[in-house]
Image (cartoon, rainbow, N blue to C red; front, side, top):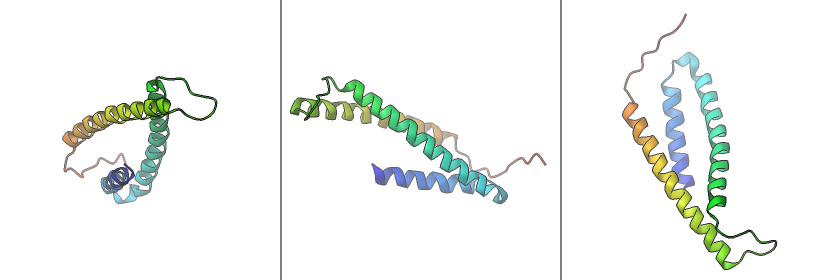
Length: 108
């Protein structure tokens, strides 16, 4: 998962910086960093919440039982499958909206 995320994030960062005029690359890099931080924070919260909702047993005070571990991994598999579908849909929509245009309108 990390290998895939790093590959996609690197490609997106290069595409973002390459899509802006040369005098705006610092702004594009800052936007990319901010988007990654916000996305990571929200993603962690959403994934953690979904897995917690799908764990069907109560959390123990001590060691995890085999049933709890199985329930956790079941919730994790469902969460990641749903997220894979969502990411695929977003990627497909994003790919359809791409253009080769590099023209920009400067307000100055």
